[in-house]
Amino acid sequence: MAESNTALRVLEGRHPDAPQQKDLDKCVHCGLCLNACPTYRELGIEMDSPRGRIYQMVQVASGAAPMDESYLEHMGLCLGCRACETACPSGVEYGKLIEAARTEIQSKVKKPFPWQQVEDFAYGTLVQTPWMLRLVALNMWLYQKSGLESLVRSTGILKLMGPFGKIEHLTPEAQLPTFFSQYGKVFFAEGERKHRVALLGGCIGNIFFARLHEATVRVLQKNGCEVVVPATQGCCGALHAHAGRREEARALARNNIDALLQTNYDAIISNIGGCGATLKEYHEILEHDHAYHDKAKRFVGKLKDVNEFLASIDLNMNMGKVDRRVTYQDSCHLCHGQKVKIGPRKLLKLIPGLEFVEMPASDVCCGSAGVYNIIENEMAEQILSSKMRNVNSVAPEQIASSNPGCMIQLAAGSRLHGQGKLKDNPQPVKHIVELLDEAYRNAR
Ligand code: SF4
Ligand code: SF4
Image (cartoon, rainbow, N blue to C red):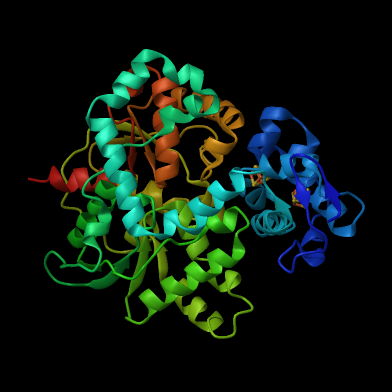
């Protein structure tokens, strides 16, 4: 035990997955990434910039600085959005570095009771167990549909609940039946079958975005895809990788490779930008696993974000009009992680009647970042407020997105800060696939 206080217990020794010197050395401290960083833009503090965080990682790696509260705070405040990676001319793989730093933190720093136990249960059990997620969905659905949620909100009791009260408005609607009920099914192509694809449902996406997943199936069917929803797929491990729970991420990656690689699909489709970035990095997560590394590379070769896939095929243009002014918020892990920026815009511009309008700084994070808006709620709200100024500047009626986490955050932003028709829209945010689905349904 190297250090001890009331909040932290820090264990000695470097972790094998800790940031590697060769990766840290790529940073030449030029600072060209600073203005791309949402936390630096908000706070103007070097320690909360990519360059400052890399410097702190170097200090900890060399033993010149301890892994103390300050280090944890600055690493914790990073959104993991990887905008710095896009901005960096030296090829620094910041996403890899922050995940490595968090893996080391996770292995060495034990949180006080009961937070460690709650976190272990959420990551280690809940998101990996479909029946528990279904149970959560049922209870939340009853709470929301019985009127209890409205009652709680109207009483003002949330103001007495401290941090829990502040994040309550981010609770998404539980959707029954969940998408788990579609697992193991095959959905046939409309007309001639041109592609055979597998669809990934994720974990919590199945209970909060079941209707989005169904819309994704319909849009793929309209485009000549036979869609298989493999029964033994599971959580992709993105939340685990971002939180530094590397071994759990590896186990989940192996499970999905076993579940999906046994059939020769033309593509494996994800409609969640955040999951897709991790799914495309399975070969890196399993780099030292001799039994799985080659399989992981084949898996990654088939993985496609749904926007990327649809933009690459001859899209079915038998659509009706969607008369609406729409802007697009890039999903960080789709644009900075997967480098997919053109496909989503191409699809939006193909929808008849839809007026696409680009907002300023669309590729700056909205503050969602997985569970960041829950854990770092204050900073997330500040970033969201800046985001909504950019949204409002182009006066959209709806925001298009490619990631459910962003959809929750932007819907909250629209309720809190939205202006004009956006504020009045009962569904201010839609996934691009949902807009395509609407267009196909509007076809005569
Ligand atoms: S990942 Fe995002 S928040 Fe973190 S340092 Fe890079 S730009 Fe800043
Ligand atoms: S991460 Fe890249 S852009 Fe940022 S300071 Fe280092 S070398 Fe420069």
